[in-house]
Image 1: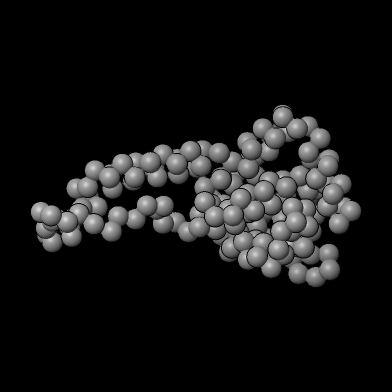
Image 2: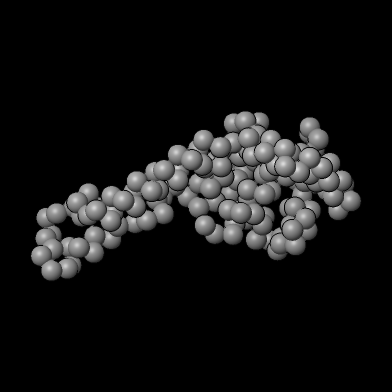
Length: 157
């Protein structure tokens, strides 16, 4: 998983604690973790294109969640940043090896390919079963000061 996914997930989670109607700029989000603003902004724009965030231009503009956190899964965020492709791509290496055959689809026949596909599916299923709202509730259960601290930090930036 690339760092952009981590940055996007943390940014989205932090936005769950914003006051209704409030947006936060890419610069403020980047300063929160000491990240490069331009690179984080690219991740945020990908989230806008995916319908996860909305953006408002101008001095009081910024980013906010486009949907309720109950409707945004971790898989939505990962897919927005990384794309929908599977993590493992079978290149049909067996076709080139001893006994390989050009008329066999090794993506289906190869046991390694099958195992990796099952693992990818399990990973995606797990991410699809977790929402930002559930993650927010877990964080608040372990770290009850986080919502207030996050809002205060954004107010100071």
